[in-house]
Length: 165
Length: 122
Image (tube, chains in turn orange, green):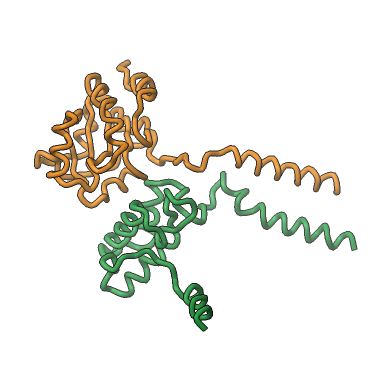
């Protein structure tokens, strides 16, 4: 019995030790390999932007951003690069048109369509934690989710995942 | 006396981050919204519920809870919706499933085991 309790004790220590190795900042996504959520929002051009726009285009990128978000500026050149390879769509969170338009004019726009998430509820619909966040969508399924700005070193991952087979 | 008041303040004040314009007029729904808010984790602030957090995402979650309550959705429907978007991490009490069985049963079984061990020795 004593020996058994010792085993249990060391097993617990092992589990707790393993737990220490985990990064509490890694945020899990519940959308991976699931269908994209349904949505319908106004686009920057004043049209309708819905989930159907993302479904029938093969591989696309959906980027959550805002002009008030500094890291979004950091990832912007990378998005411009990616937009040469695959269609990039954007959803601007809590962004006013008068702030967004000059921002895009200054930096250039990689986006085919920009949806306006005025109240931030669309971001919750996508399980977004913070900005920027980027999804790779293939045939209406979420394939990959990138949290934080896309840096130069992340481009490889994106290029591999979005390569047309 | 001042120190006493100071400490009573800490004890009695329920720390909530809700802003006045968020509060619903319907008191019953507001109470429900707060009950739901206590069960949902603010995802970016390490073990704080959305009720007590000032983070942007917590504000948005509080807002969506209230919008859905006003639409007449039940507590379960709302929690299920947010759970489906953010996964188990958003819930303070994990669901009882095959892979979480240990989480729920281990403490109880430890208690039983140790009581058994303790009494047998005598």
